[in-house]
Image 1 (cartoon, one colour):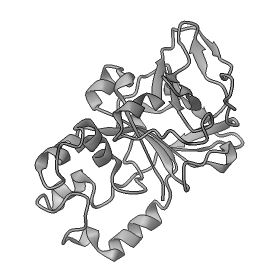
Image 2 (image 1 turned 45 degrees about the horizontal axis):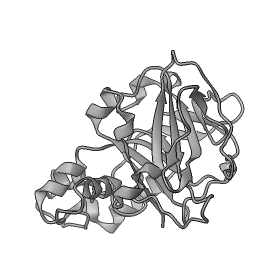
Image 3 (image 1 turned 180 degrees about the horizontal axis):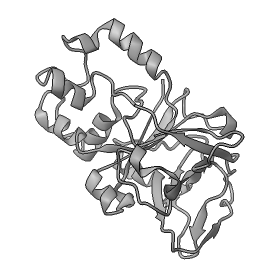
Image 4 (image 1 turned 135 degrees about the vertical axis):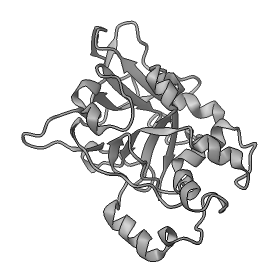
Length: 256
């Protein structure tokens, strides 16, 4: 489901920036040794159409997304999927509908992003030809992450795909718009601790275990710029999503 800046009478399903509504018992997420994370976005699950989603979000409650964006150290410490020590630099919190929550002031040293309301619309998303699932359908023996001998890898098809989806915006579920290689491969490599090769089947199999939870692209209206017009991605295993184990979501980011 695509998320766009809401205008006029658009129904609002969430927002970028502002202050998060946290239960009194919930601490503000912190990356130990580095400091508190910045609040990126909140999504009101009840306002999203379950029929238009391809993932099993909770029917109620809110998802809150936090990320260590470099405000506190000038961008010195990076949150990278391949660096396990940095995983605490991105977090997803789920606040159930029956939990009393109130807006929490941003910790000292952090400046909150401007509030930008988001609306949702159902739209088809497409995976790149070198996505593991597409590769498995058309050329299972082809090298992972590279072009192969099939029309879906032709320049004409790639140009049409780019025209269909030419930027990494905001979305919940669907196929991620990866700025570089498929984000599923990045997450699989991280989970397997880099102990696999791109030639073997294990990496591709693990990549297939992850679905996009949320993607937030660079957004001028919210003063958000992730690298060079990049995007933040949170992925999760479907079974963890069903069990509401959002602490197991994995994060990566990409830019051009």
